[in-house]
Image 1: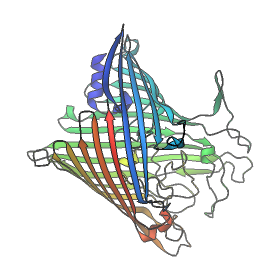
Image 2: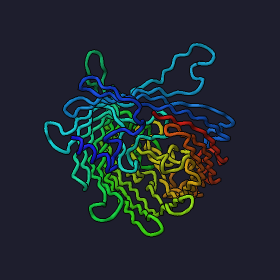
Image 3: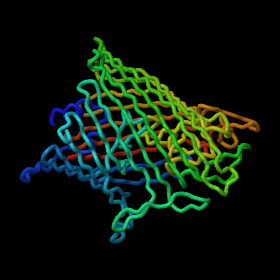
Image 4: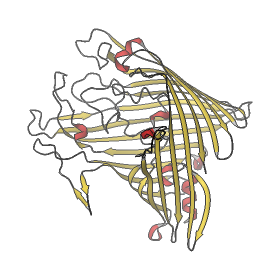
Length: 489
């Protein structure tokens, strides 16, 4: 049992699929045959915006917090139970400083049971319940660690460790369900006969194979993952199939989207540096069918055909003063060539995009750019996305043992030209087009105060192109300054 779990952990292939990494061990208690480990995290963050792109809000200092308690109980026969309750909130929330406010931000971030070698089957693990899910480098599914609340999914993971060669895993998760609960679960009624009777019912299916190149004499990792999502009903109720490109009010639809993703990240040790390469890509297919029997578009179909790729190279100079690490990369998320017919924009499912598309979070949160869940699992498909291109450069150094510095530069463009006047995908009537979005600079400094406490400060500057004003809601630059204390025990 211990050998299998250790192999999974050391491979570092899907760490959060196997065990959450949000906290470190604090104290152990032996309770008969049960070993209980208690840990936790307290993270406090101050943020100030000189100007927020789109809203124009600025000159505002705010504070947020995350408080997590992790309880891990190792039972007999390879059974483990993990509970991670958390409270997340804003400083001064609910009039806390003015009266006796009551917080409403308490949630159960994780609650799962882990079975090692169930029924005597070697090298198999089963993880059942609410859990953080990180696939590979979190391009498509991630826990969004920067967010104070973070992301966790309800589901079941079955994994198999194939020695040093890799990890095969299957995950089923429920993203949203139709039904109600009193003494038991009762299923609801989906959208039928033009009447909206319930919220969306959304399932997530993931099959993945991840491994290390070490058995082949090369460093680095590889991954092949397939993700299937099937949103139905209200989350898709703005689907526009009108052939003239104008919104027709939208019709609830049954949607099926499958994403096939591959990644290779070989590394090579040399006398002067460790060379790193990154090659990854994904293709999407699926369809949406209008369900509203009262709609003139009833039964009509639209196909998905988005794609994504990323290429990059870098080096870690561990033997050089300040141990610099550099990386240059290019990401491409396909956009729609027009706002009619099939959807060519790439949808990134549930990514930790903060890690890749700039720490200012301007690009991936913006509904007009990136086919993502800005305010629902799937954004309004009547406004087709022009996609995103990102040319980036990263430089990280360590001038002192306890100090680390980072600089990230991004140059953003759209994958397809957009209409400057509307900010949408260009049409036959478009008079002026552009593909420029803007520049972003992210600076960060970290100081390791102790084994458990880390201080960090950062400055994120996004300067939008003037032609992109309609997309962002303005062309005034955004400045976001933050300071954070992260305590783990």
